[in-house]
Image (cartoon, rainbow, N blue to C red; front, top):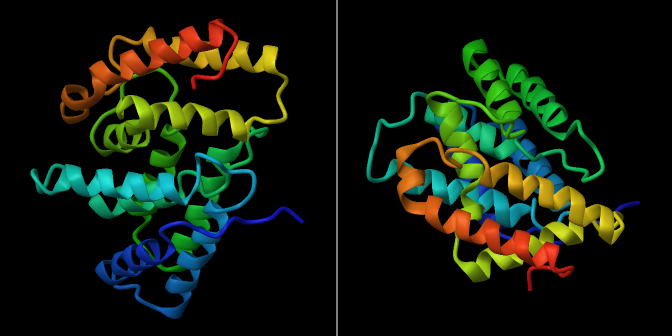
Length: 226
């Protein structure tokens, strides 16, 4: 049976999930149990990047966005829920992770009697983290930019990100990995903008392009971005 790593930030994450339930009027044993299930799922093998550290980083970015500009999000609770569920299901060899994560979210949120408009928003936000090219609006763009915040972090943080992505794709032979990962990096570099919101664009766009270019060069040189 696949192992689970000891979840990192588990206490902080459970507290965040419980507080979210309180804000939604759903602070029940069922709600708290769902938080525990989510945290364990985020720690499931073979995650090395898409793990509880990534989830916690997303939630911290969400807070950083909201603190200086309250009211910037149309439905901050739906955004928070989308971040909690966006990689709840993650198998590197599957193309259905976002769909399955979104379906999980819908099943639970409906069972809690949350408004259908919120449930559908969460579902769509999660599907948007497939990061297909195109323009998004409103909260959807915030969810996507938060998920991509890692691209614009410091050189050291980004290098570790690339190493962790390779660890998740351990089953892919190196030549195929280079081809596939290079295509992903080029895809982001060829976009007019990586970040759709001005907040993320101003803070992270330049560094993201430097990081992506360096990682692409490292792959083309036949090595991991070390």
